[in-house]
Length: 279
Image: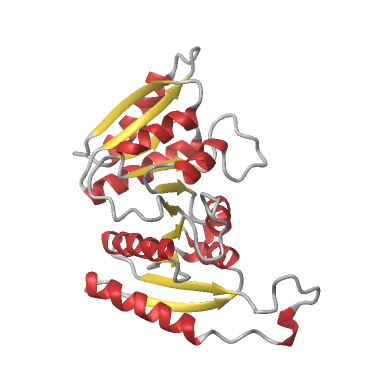
């Protein structure tokens, strides 16, 4: 199954930067790129009736032009890229979560149209990062061009989610031709950080011979702050959707939430693929 790389595009500058990241990922993965614009009925805000009872709204001409122009610019930059554009009647967050069931990767900008200026990550990005059914790449900062230097950094804590993140991180490092840096943030009484890192590094080296893997223990009281600081030197940071000690009801752990809101580079949230589309 040739799952596509999917990116949400609404015409805002952050979403266009996200589309560039998605195009590069699609080229690296030899996958098609789908540009998706989720739109709501114009009466769908604060109306006490279901606006869809009168029929689905038609896609807008402005939306079509915006998607086609974005696609043309991306193909001009990456001529081998296959791009499909689509408008979907529905909220953009819910639309991308549904698209993630059949995607190789979903890419979202850190803010889109209509976002409150004080929000570091818009509601769409938050929704998709938490509920995605495949890996989700959050492009931040919103105005940063495609990163060309720096390692792929992975947060490691011995959890099953972190193991998945190490696997995704190793694949990304190979695609980018750079090193993989595994970081374990240890508290004062943490004595097993070295072993946790050694186990993760052995798995990465075993599955990707020739990959340069660095192990790094950072002693700090707050893992999220230490990882945000470390992200300043990275091209990409990869985090599991939940770590050790997280509440079972949380779809996205506190460290991952902090990274998708504050990291200084793009963040890949390592969701597993939906079982029915794992092929």
